[in-house]
Amino acid sequence: MDILLRRLTPEEDWVYLPTLSTGAAAQSAGDGSGKTSVAISPSLLVGLESGFEVYSEKASSTSYRAYITYRFKPDQVRRLLKNAHIPYSEAQTRVALVLPVLQTDKGVYLWESNNPWMAAWKVRPYTHELTPMTAPLGDLEDSSTISARQALAADPAALAAIAARYNVSQVIVAHARLTQKDGANQLSVRLINGHRESGKADLTEVLGEETDIAVDGAAAQTFSYAEGDEDFAAKVGDVLAQTYLTEPVGNFPSLAERSIEAVIAKYASGWKSRTLIDHSKEARLPVTAFFDRIEDWSKIRSALIATPLVGSVQVSSLSRKGAEMDVRIFGDPSRMQVAMENQGIVFWSETGDRWFLATPAVAGKYRGRRFLRSDRRGLSSADDFVEPDDGVRNVSDERNPDEQ
Image (cartoon, rainbow, N blue to C red; front, side, top):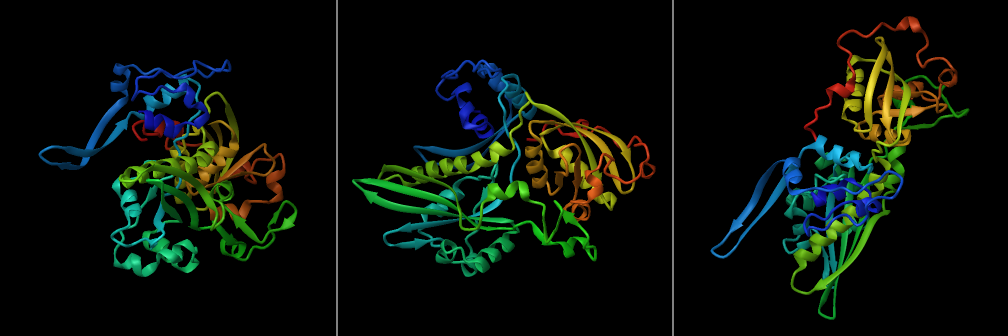
């Protein structure tokens, strides 16, 4: 529970969290603005747990070792933080592939069997983080696709090839520099953005023959549906996070594990700050959804259901090409943009008064149109709408409370 609560909340609010592993209460009782300390009794802790799974068991005549995945009840955890007025995030980025490159005075290692840095990333899954990551298989095809030096040099062709093999949109090079001094291992770790799909496409790809689109009064050359995430992702070759830890020689696995946990926490802090759910701040937004096919409408609905920032959605009008709705969100709309982009949906506003939803291709047809900046509704005619039937419900009622 200590790990989970700190994974979901910003570091500056950890003073309001107990340290259950040591029995210590929260350092702060409150800040006077609404935030209060979280108290978890033994009985409440048992009530928060929904189950656990033991795996990778190893036993000998003198010892037993295993890993455990604990599962907690999402609604109860949310309520715990909400009652303490502590913002939290539970939105995940897409899974990134990690290439763990170890550099020592003797050489650079990636696929070699004696690379303990790779072994440390494979010890346990890191897919339950807000910024989930997975290590590669390390088979012959991997080693023939990219080398350690190509990874460090951010070779675009090799990194794109390994990304395609694992069907991921981002590859992160985890560069660890190991040195020994005064009987201690010193490990410096950098997470380097090796490859990331930009999310940009030529207008001709998404608009066909239409070329009269203007964005902010100027002719548009490209359309990006990942604007909210671009700043977080940084550019290829940029350092996303870095740490430096030291430990006495003799227990590199422990040092590697602590370094991985620390660098992932630093990397996740940027994403967390952009997707925080703050129940103390609430807004109701008039939203127009555009779509060409019923499948696109289903994607939009699914994205709204899957986004924890959304409290409720009331659909007032629905047609074959669009829908009008009121969306209740927690926090700032800019965070909603990031969360929806992570679901593959564009969420934008032309004036700040009305908001719009669409898949990337459909958004390219409408974004920047002058009629969207008027006081009229996003769709051109009220005659295009029909009242929603029983098949259109409040999406907040459809969220599975057991999913986390």
